[in-house]
Length: 300
Image 1 (cartoon, rainbow, N blue to C red):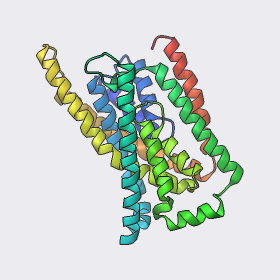
Image 2: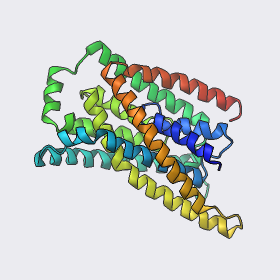
Image 3: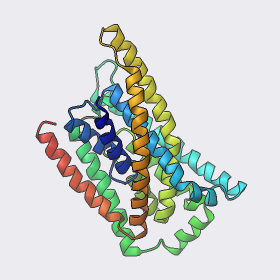
Image 4: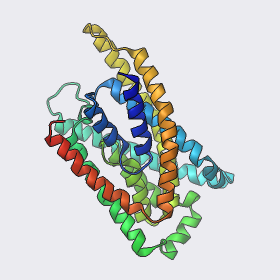
């Protein structure tokens, strides 16, 4: 893969990952337009390494806020950790059950079926984008109509670590699990919107959502690394070896570019959150859904 393609994908990933518009959908479309196979092990590893770059961007951007809220005291950290673990466990359960269900239904009778083979299907990405867009739009319009959360919700969030209650953390973890198998169902967009709809302030929902992303990224990277290693061994047996070293080097390069693009996107996201423009991301996702479906009809 030429370096310029890695850089393009890294910038697309970095900008889109930290905006609630589904980075995966944008990267898959970019790969399709450049003639690449999004479901290939090399490409899925590149994608998760780009996620790693944006994960470090999240840590760099939010560290000061996290330190002031989640690490302000031992008690605050314990309450935050409990909510984070609870939400992450729910994500894992929901995501794994949904993954197995999809593999058993859509791949019935197929040996060694992998859900990653669906990642390049624009006909599935389009409706996922639309669903995310509708959820974001509902949360954004509700926020504009009602303004700040109701007094009882504000009281609950003040008592919760980082502004989320166990209930809010649970719903955010549940929805994050729904987002795992689907490219286009924006993780950040749906989790932040869910937090807002359950009474959390949008800033606190944003902060907790990206803390969830930091926890989720390492196991996903490990999973895709193992998948690439298996594919490398299988390809070697067939006489068509995969350039593992080149793939890893390109992935690391992409992570660096994604890091800087992610910092830009986070600044943009926070600004739009603070100025009541969240609903505009929902409109964008709906428009993007139509564009993706049109590309599907054109044979991409």
